[in-house]
Every structure is written in structure tokens, then in C-alpha cells.
Image (cartoon, rainbow, N blue to C red; front, side, top):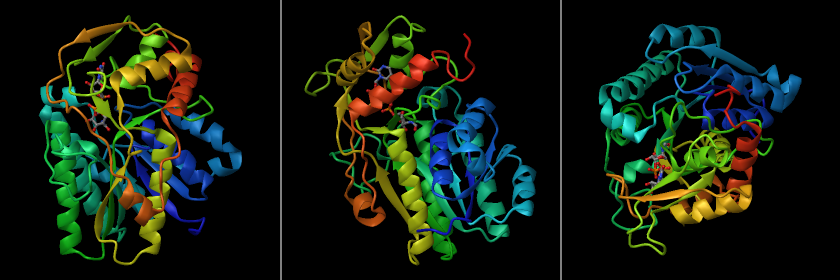
Amino acid sequence: MVASSQKILVTGGAGFIGTHTVVQLLNNGFHVSIIDNFDNSVMEAVDRVRELVGSNLSQNLEFTLGDLRNKDDLEKLFAKSKFDAVIHFAGLKAVGESVANPRRYFDNNLVGTVNLYEVMAKHNCKKMVFSSSATVYGQPEKIPCVEDFKLQAMNPYGRTKLFLEEIARDIQKAEPEWKIILLRYFNPVGAHESGKLGEDPRGIPNNLMPYIQQVAVGRLPELNVYGHDYPTRDGSAVRDYIHVMDLADGHIAALRKLFTTENIGCTAYNLGTGCGSSVLEMVAAFEKASGKKIALKLCPRRPGDATEVYASTEKAEKELGWKAKYGVEEMCRDQWNWAKNNPWGYSGKP
Ligand code: WQD
């Protein structure tokens, strides 16, 4: 068991995956400091984290409004706290938006991260868990995706993740005292079982499940199904959807690995279930969980989409002792529980 007083800096900790991970960190006895610029998150989500963990554990949580692109924001944090490790979520993650505005993605995702490495090094904090993505596999030549596959980017967002993995490998090679774990998320969905935390994207959702969620609560009229002529069991594309709570626990396992393993170097792990589900199967599962009918419009394929992507989970199971616990039914149950209690997300209003 890791010492309970260890202090973790969580960048982007007010976001969808960040909040769920912070709940688990606090419940596992870690002290947590969040820095977030609220580019895609709100303070209400942090308040709900406090509610969920209770008044005692909330004393182990600090929040700072700040931006990684402003090195002073980071300096102030590291000057007043000694961090044992950093979990780095902060970054933009919408594929379509990145194609329209690549400079914003390179500025946010790359500049912010380079600043973070600089300030971490200056304060001798050299343990990092980095939020990478299955998008670094591009269109995989075969499936399931294995961590030693060739990497390729299909869009500016994916390119930032690929660049940031390469930057991590270069830093650790030059300075072997660094210990870095790259976690490649497949498709994060679902919500905390309480229904108090969930995904609340700004504007029209890019991703499938938040879009389905908004159709179910009546915020959007119908789901555009991008592609129904793929060579899959029902013609729609297949992805490896993973419950956000499984993802959160994957970060705890990664931290434990960093604190207990000497020669971890810079190592990548898939965080997926190893099971693929099609778009139409996810629609059917959400209809079953919610009792709502999701109106569909069959549309052409979305440019850049892969036919079928899902994870090999062997390496994470063997080396992190982590395996996803929840299936699609629980993902949809918990996502609907969040949606029906928070149809307008954290703001509570249209
Ligand atoms: C899934 C499937 C769509 C919306 C991306 C990033 C990845 C991660 C998750 C950040 C595809 C189809 C979608 C819709 C649809 N991002 N779809 N109608 O593209 O697999 O992965 O988001 O962590 O890094 O690459 O996820 O949810 O956008 O799409 O038919 O309105 O659903 O075509 O087949 P994707 P997605």
C-alpha cells in the first residue's frame, strides 16, 4: 500500500476523467492538488468531488485556477508544495476542433506540457503519469492494439499526443532518473455511480456517448450514425469503450507502479477493456439502460475514422495488476443515471 501522505499534482483535474480520478486518489489516501484553467470544466465539478469524498478527505484536496502555458502559475504551485508525482490530464481533446484550429492544440497541449516538465525538473519532481490516447495507433493494421505497435497520427489532436509521447521518451532517455507512465485511453464513457459526476462537454458533443446522452434527455433531436457500411458485424464502426471509473483506477495502479518500481523508465500501457462494441450496439445498450428511444440518421463515414479499434489488455494486467471491471451495461447504466439527474450538465440550465 502506498504511503497515505503522498501528494499528487493533477493537471486538468476538474475535467471528466480528472474528477473521477481525484475521487479515487482521495479515497486511496493520497493528498491532491488540482490545477485547471476551466477551458473545458467548471468549479461545480470540483465542489461535487468534495461532496462525494466527505469533509475529512476534502481537507486533502486543494484547487488552483491556473494555466500550464503560464509558467508562473506552475512555479507558484511548486514553490509552496512538494509533489511526489504528477498526473497530467490538462489538454484539448476534440478531433474535429483540432483539424479546424491546430495552432490552438499545439499551444495548449505541447507548450503547456513542456512548461510542466521544466518546472517539475527544477523542483526535482520526476514521476509523471501522462494522459495519452489510443489515437496514437491511428488506423491500426491489425487488432487488438498492442503497445509496441507502430504509432501514427491521423489529426492534429492525435499528433499532439504522439509528439508528447516522444517528448516523454526523449526526456527519460536523457535523464534516467525520470519515471514516466503513458496511459493510452481507448474510449472513456460512463459516470460515477452516484450520478453526481459525469461528462459535460462544451457545445455540441464530438464523441458518441455524450451525444447519445443528449438525444436521450431531449437536448438533441437525433444521432448521426457516421458510417453504416463498415466491414463489421452490423456495418457501424467498432471501438473499445471503457468505464471512466475503471480508467480512474488505472491511474491509481500506475501511480503505485511508479512508487514501487525502480527501472520503469518511460512505459506505455493500454487502458481498455479488450472488447469492441459497434455504434449501433452502444445505441441499443443505452436505449435499454434509459428506456428511451434514440432517433438515428444514417450518414456517410466521418473522415479519419478507423473501422475497428480495441485494446490488448495483457501488459496492463501483468505489469500494473489492473483490469477493467465494468461492461457496456454498467457504462450505460451510470451514464444514464448522470444524464437523467443532470440533463444540462453541471450548469443545470440550457
Ligand atoms: C466513436 C465512434 C464515430 C459521434 C476520439 C479520440 C480519442 C478519444 C475519444 C479523447 C466513431 C461514431 C461519433 C457521433 C457517430 N478522445 N460517432 N456519431 O473517434 O473513437 O475517439 O474520442 O480522449 O482520442 O480519437 O470517439 O466517440 O468520437 O467516435 O456515429 O455523433 O462513434 O464515427 O465510429 P473516437 P468518438
